[in-house]
Length: 90
Image 1 (cartoon, rainbow, N blue to C red):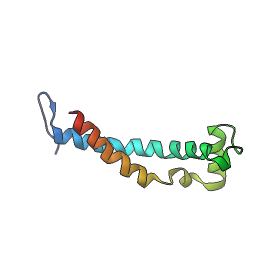
Image 2 (tube, helix red, strand yellow):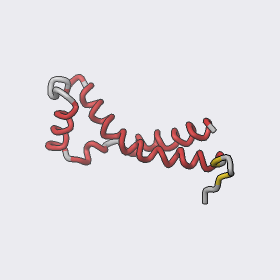
Image 3 (tube, rainbow, N blue to C red):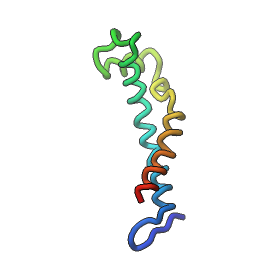
Image 4 (tube, rainbow, N blue to C red):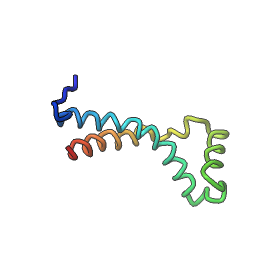
C-alpha cells in the first residue's frame, strides 16, 4: 500500500504515482505521434491535407491497431520518465 504523511505523499509514493501516470500519457501520445510522423514523412506529405485526413486514411486502410504501433516503446519511455520526473521533483 502507498502511505503518505500529513504533509503529503512520501518519495516512494510520488515516484510510483509518476510511473503510473506514464501509462495514460503513453496511450494518448502513441496515436498522436504516429500521425505526426506520418504527416512529416517526405514520401507521404502529398497524400494528406491535415491530421484528420491522415487519421481517416490510416483507419480506413490499415485499421485502428496501426495507430498504436510503437505503443510499447512509448510506454518504455513514459513510465520510467514519469517516475524520474516526479521522484526527482519531490
